[in-house]
Amino acid sequence: MQHMKRNTVVAGGVDLAWVEQGRGPPVVYLHGALTTLEEGWLGPLPDLATEHRVIAFDRPGHGLSGTAPGLGAVWRQAAVIRGAVRALDVVDPVLVGHSFGGAVALAYALQFPDEIRGVVGLAPIALPEARLETALFGVRSWPGSGPWINAMAAPVDAALLPILWRAMFLPQSMPDRFASDFPRDLAGGRSQLRADGEEALAMPMELSRSALAYGGARAPLIILQGERDAVVSPWRQGRMLAALWPRAEFRGLAGLGHMAHHFRPDAVIQAVEDLASGSLARRAERAPAFA
Image (tube, rainbow, N blue to C red; front, side, top):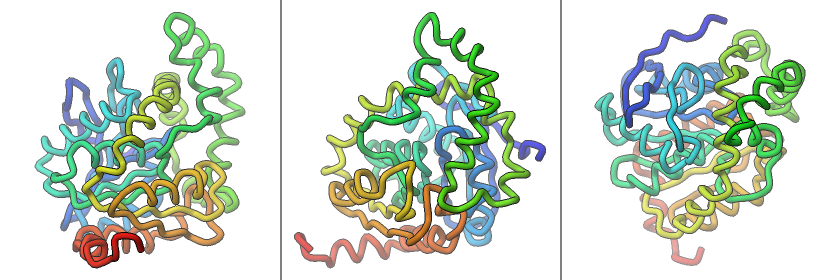
C-alpha cells in the first residue's frame, strides 16, 4: 500500500500529518502504539465518513508527523493535537481514540471538556500498570544509549513487529486488507519506535496524573472494548475507567479482542452518534446517582 496522501498542520511547533474524509458532524481519530493513521482508515473510519467529517492524525512521532522533546507525555500530546484541531476549524468534535490513542483522547477531554462532544475510547489504556511495551521499547528512549539500542534492535524488530501486529487482533485473525495494506515501513521505522518508547516510559506517571483527575471529568465517555482483549484488560482498564469517570458507559463486545473496532464498525458508529446527538449525556442526567 502506498501511504495515504496526507496534509500537514503546525501545532505547538510540531508538523502533524492528517487525512480527512466526509462531511457532517466532526470526528477526530487518534491511533494507538505501533500504528499510524492508516490503522483507522483500514478499520471503521470509511464507514464513519459517510455521515461525518472524519479527521485522523498521525500522533506526534508517528507516521509522517514530527515530534519534540516531551511529547511522549499524553497530556502534552493532547494539547498539541488540540491546537491542530483548532487550526483546522474543527468545532465540537467527538474524539475517538484507540489504545494509547485513547489515553491521549482522555487527557484531551480532561483539559478541554467544553470543546468536544465526548470521547469514544476503543480499548483505552487509562490506568498505570506494568506493561510489556515498556520493556520492549522503553529502553530506546534512554538518554545516551537509547538511539544505539534502537538502531541495533532493527534485525530483532524485523521478526518481532509482525508478531506484535498480528497479536493485536487475537483471538481474531488480522483481516486480509489490513495484512496487505498496512504501512509497516512507517509503523516500524526507527524514529517511530523511539517515539513508542518515549510514550511507554512516560506512561506510568502520565496515567497516574490522568487517574487522579477522572473523578472530576465533565465530558461524556463511551468505552468500547472486546471482552477477550488480551492487550488492554477490560476489567483492570475499561470497566475500572467507567467506574471512575462520572458520565461514562462501558460497552463490552463479546468474543472480540483488542482490535474489536475492526470487526464491529457498527458499534463505533452507534457510539459516535450517541455522543454527537447528546443522547448519552441525557441518559446520564436522568440516571440515579448510585445506579
